[in-house]
Amino acid sequence: MNKALKRFQLTTLGACLTLALTTGVMTTAASASSHSDEVRAAQAAKISLKQAINIASKEATGTLVSAEFDDDDSDADGNGGVYEVEFSTDRINYEIKIDAMTGKVVKSESERLDSDDTNDYKVQKKAKINIVAAMNLAEKQTGGQVMEIEFKNDRDYAKHTSYYEVEVLKGQKIIELNIDANTGSVFKRKVKK
Image (cartoon, rainbow, N blue to C red; front, side, top):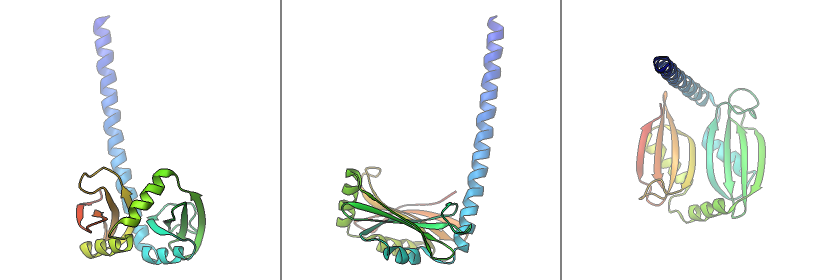
């Protein structure tokens, strides 16, 4: 019985390892496919993120908190994706979705901020580098076009507690940058895989 149990354990272990390796390969392939789909959709967009921000700013008030390109959002008029742009005041968060092909506002929502979001808003208001300046820095650093940016206020980096996470499209690559919100220095840079 002990030999049978050991054989069963080895067979089970082998099956689990095979499943894990197969899942890893499939996830990597799906991620690469998704990445290339995102790049193609971003390249095909008729309006830029900065244009989407300008359009969204007419629909909301407050401070720009984040803006990103979403290539597979169901709110898009067609299959070209949308820009999701968020503004906050000290009490309300506004999310506006702009069709990346037409520039049309396809959705606009607002909700009250919770205490964490209110704190993030206050920290961002005190930052020396605003989100548009961070976008310009990222584009200058990479020679590409920003497709996503978000203000972060956390303790992930001891020397950089408030910063902007930025994704920049350059050719066929997406470059990820972290920019300190008080100094404007780039403290992390990598190519998205």
